[in-house]
Length: 137
Image 1 (tube, rainbow, N blue to C red):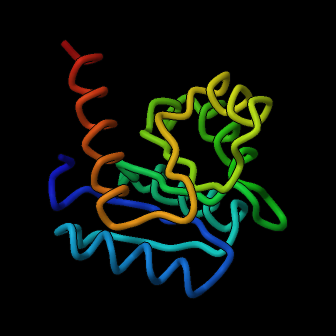
Image 2: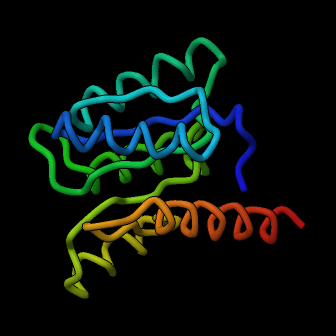
């Protein structure tokens, strides 16, 4: 599992869901959680943190949002040389193969499918953490 001091960015346009995800992450022991209401605000926060040498360690983003969607945010993150390898999980109700393939092509680390449970988030975070450890070996 990611360490408790992992700096996490949660990007979700619906305030209630954003707070629920933040609460679930807190229940899992995380404390460094920042939220954003869309992909533009999220990307601005990512860039600001990167510029200050305080990168985020993990991004959880909804797919369907106004202004800048989660998939667009994923593409921006992967195109930025300093953030390209940041673990990225898409939270989505999208199950169509075309959307899944697009996310995979842009190196999403995993999906959390709505509706989800706290256990589903924990399982996905564990999966991504193990995936990262295997890649680093």
